[in-house]
Amino acid sequence: MLKEFKEFIAQGNVLDLAVGVIIGSAFTAIVNSLVDYLINPLIGLFIGGIDFSDWVFKVGDAKFKFGSFINSIISFLIIAFIVFLIVKAVNKLMPKKEEEEAVDEQIALLTDIRNALAPEKAAAEEEAARLEASETDPLDK
Image 1: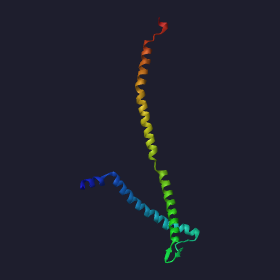
Image 2: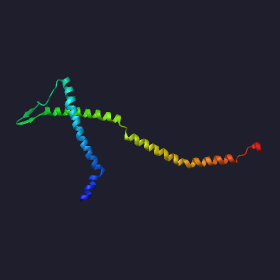
Image 3: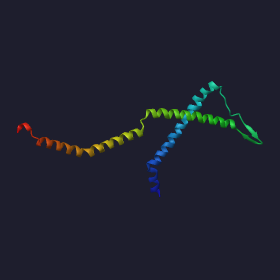
Image 4: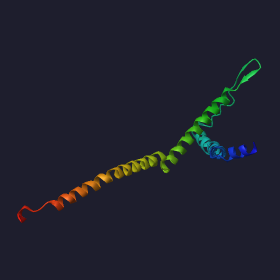
């Protein structure tokens, strides 16, 4: 059982997933910091630092803090937009794998076509050479 567990952990998928989670955590911290310390204060300059967290309504003893929920939605939208901009910028800088794979497929296909036509080309060249050698000049007769 220990050997199976070791094989499971050593699989590329598990390691890739672990790296993805760790990088995702670090990236989340960076994006949250960007939003909390740079973007939100900038927005606060323009809209006067509106904070909805004090908005509540009560039903009996229950408190519904819908203002905090609105703040969370606004933060989510800001974070989603920042991530969108980052991904868009990275996509412009990085070549797309699909395009590279498509080019590789086209090269392979053209190579296959060339290789398939090579015997026909060689046969046609031999036939042309044979005809040229067998032809005699009618003026020589």
